[in-house]
Image (cartoon, rainbow, N blue to C red; front, side):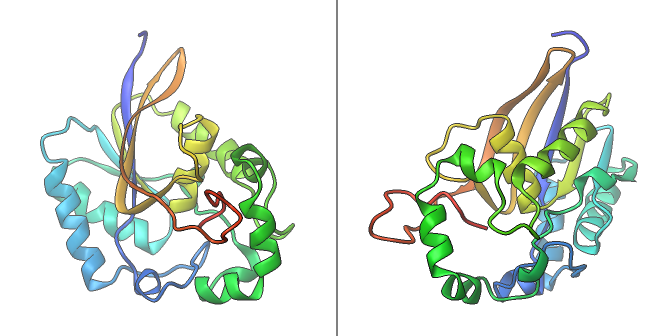
Length: 214
């Protein structure tokens, strides 16, 4: 493929809010002690990979993760605005369990939607759709002309997987430090590998596979 390069997107290390199951979105939360350990583990895992730089969204949790990896791999670090997390509006800072409990009818409705429907339409008008996220993430990736390791957020990676038609029955969500490896060329962007994919539990007895998860 002409002008081919490898770009890997990783979900940042654990934060305290991740541990407490609070929805972060644009809230600027730092890594937990475990998250710092995970960043070093990621650096060791990718030590032999030929990356030219490490990129990260502007938020603390990705900046901290990227800074550790950049130092260990001895490559430059850059901030990329296009990797900002998905905005969850009024749900940010709330318990994920509470959100589901307080919006049972909405989640029941969403659990019956196709992946394409969930991709295009956000659950609330004040929440950023996966489609909208992908429309800023894909151009950011396309503009990168070298091999890169990008530290970003769960909603960003989910949006990317949906836009690139990753074949799963459910909305793809990655565990902490999970990653998606892309081959980018003049011909387009393709998913080559995924690590850390979570298979969600059923939210209702009526839905074979819920498609809306965080």
